Image (cartoon, rainbow, N blue to C red):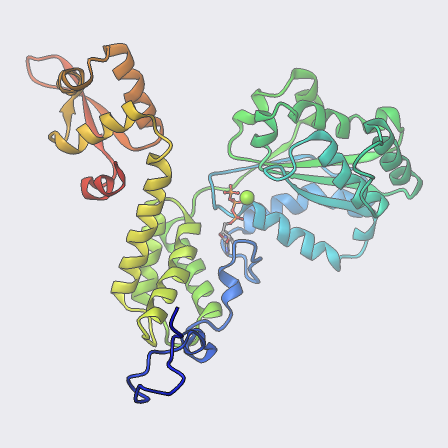
Amino acid sequence: MKTFIPAGGKFKKEMRPRSFKDLLSAEESLFRSPEVFDPDYVPEEYLHREAQMRSIAHCIKPALRGERPLNALIHGPPATGKTTAMRKLFQELEDTPGAARIARVHINCQITSTKFGIFSLIHRAVVGHLPPETGVPFSKVYEATFRKLRRENRILLVVLDDMDNLLRERHANEVLYDILRAHEVFPGAKTAIFSIVSGTEFLYKLADRVRSMFRPQEIYFPPYSAGEMYDILKRRAELGFFPGVIDDELVEKVASYAYEHGDLRLGIELLKASALIAESHASRRIEEEHVEEAYSKSRAATLRSLVEPLSKEEKQLLKLLCEVEEGITSGRLYEHFSGRTGLSYTKFYRLLKKLEELRLVDTKVVSAAGRGRSRRIFLRPQREELLKVLP
Ligand SMILES: Nc1ncnc2c1ncn2[C@@H]1O[C@H](COP(=O)(O)OP(=O)(O)OP(=O)(O)O)[C@@H](O)[C@H]1O
Ligand SMILES: [Mg+2]
C-alpha cells in the first residue's frame, strides 16, 4: 500500500492530502467538553425535576435519622431523567451528614440480571468487596451481607434500575422478597428498594406476598415538554461546545425533533452528531444542513434496527404499504397482500398488529357514509425513508 503522503514531498503544501493527524487535530474541534454528550454523563444542573427530587428526598430522609427509608417506584417513559435522578441523589449523599450509615448501591438490571449477581453487588456495598464468583452458596453471601449490616447498624438502600428486565428474567419476586424480608431473618435489619421501571403495571405483575411487603411511594417522571427539552439541550450545548458553535434556532430545531419522538436522548445525540458532521466539513459552526444530515442518519439507523429483525412476511407487508395509497382500508390491503403471498386473513392481521406494536403503522377506524365502519392503515415513517432500509 502506498503511504498517504509521499516521502519526497511531491505535493505542494496546499495540495498535500491532510494526514490523519491533521484531520484529528484538537484545534479543529468544536467541542469544549465532549464528555457532556456521553450517555453516562451526570449533568451538573438537573432541570425541571424539582417535584420528583423532593419526593425522592422524602423517601430517603428517614434513613438519615437511622430509620428505614420508604420504598419507591420510580416510573416514566424513556429518557425522562429517572436514572439521572438516582445518580444525582447518590452524589449528593456523598457529603450529607448522616449518609455514611446508608449502605447504597445502584444496580443496572440490564447488565446484572441474576439473583446471585445482584446480591454480589449488595455484598460489595455492605462488606466492601465482591464475594468469590464460584464455590460460595447464595445463603452465605446473604448472611455475610446482613450480619455485617446489622452489626454496623447501617441501613441498606438498593436501587434496581430498569427492573422490568428482572421481571422478564423472572427474578423480580425473589430479589425483592429477599431484600425486604431481611429483617425477619436478621431482626433489626433495615432495607429499602427504589425500583426504576417504565410503568406502574410492574406492580401488578409481582406476586401478592411481595407486593404487600413492597408498598412503594410512586414517583412519576412525565415526558418533557418541548420548552423543557430546549432548556436542557441549550444548557448541554453551552457546556459541550465552544461559544458561538450553535445558534439558539438550531437548538430549537434539535429540541423539536427530540420532542416529536418523545426522546430527549435523541436530542443529545443529534447535538453531538451535528457537531461531528460540521467538523468533517471543516466548518467552525454547526449549520442547519449539519443538523438535517445528523437527523436523517439517525432516523435511518433507528428504522434499520426496527426493520432488520422483521420476518420475511412482515417486510413484504411493509413494502406493500409503501406502494399502495395512504389510508388504504385493511380489506383492500389484504386483497393486495393475499394476491402476492397467498397468506390467510388471520396471518395478515397478526402481521399488521406486529407492525402497529412497533409503531411502524397506525390504524384508524373510520365510518364512511352508508358503508359502515372500516379500518384504515397509515404508515408512520416516510415511504422514502422506509424503502431505503427495506430489502
Ligand atoms: N432534567 C434533566 N436535566 C438535564 N439532563 C437530563 C435531564 N433529564 C434527562 N437528562 C439527560 O437525558 C438523558 C437520559 O436521561 P436518563 O438516562 O436519566 O433517563 P431515564 O429516564 O433513566 O431513561 P430510561 O428509561 O431509558 O432508562 C441523559 O443523558 C441525561 O443526562
Ligand atoms: Mg434509565
